Length: 353
Ligand SMILES: *Cc1c(COP(=O)(O)O)cnc(C)c1O
Image (tube, rainbow, N blue to C red; front, side, top):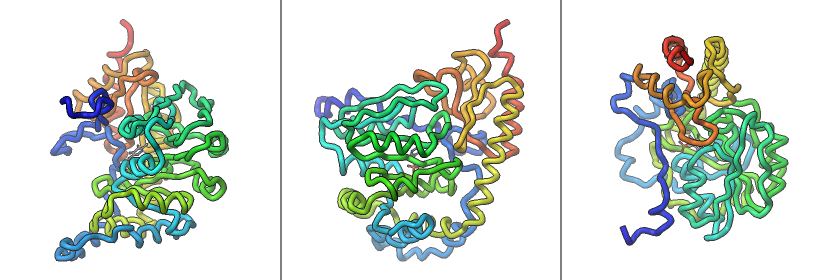
């Protein structure tokens, strides 16, 4: 297509995990979805929604939700913007800040969308390779318009301590985005940094921790001067009426949230221990997934395929540092019992004869 911008033609698009329909035939551990249904309050709200109202546009600025989120974390609604998933929020951040030729940065491996957004907006993309044990990542160079840090990181699941995040944020002249898609499963988060440092923005989502990947809601918390500029950039009605109502209901049900999160954390710790006992290598995870690796190096594809053949969906990444294993979401306890049994059965395939 001669019409297409050369940078787009040369780019690989975002590759989502396999989304089978129907999904019930599989143990679906490939997109870090929450294995539990959303709060029952979401169901009640869905049933009570007035269908005639759907002809009307939603609140363009999701005010009720921003107030709720503000109350939950101790921020003013002026410091919060809502989007159609955190992917939308990340996109708005880049559109608000980056002029063609300016630099954005991130570590690698990490969430692949940062690179794609950089290319889409004509940015100079600076990726800093990171290797195990991941606790001394390369520091970002000062001249960046944006640095993206996924914390806890994907696809491996380790978390950076807040002190290190602060140190990195203070190094750059631009905006430091902490993508906290998994923070609710981790020990630390950067919300305090938003209060202390003007250039820190935290991005969150209800996709994973609130079991609402299907409704699409992400948000950013940052300095109100930045948030007000981002509100100018976003699509005018970027969060649907359904989404605003359903997310509000989910946020109100603190008890259900705590209960489901603790079950996932408990299962994560248990699966980590059991997988290690079988002989898999597993880095401690701060997220709702783990990255198990068979004892032998370079067997990630084989591991992925062996699991796939037994209807267990995971993610394999053909990238430096990731070819030894797969990313595996933490499912329900019963699902993980079945997965561990499969992992036990296939283990001999990876050993030398
Ligand atoms: C899942 C994920 C997102 C996207 O979340 P949505 O709100 O569903 O768009 C963003 N960043 C990271 C690191 C993720 O893992």
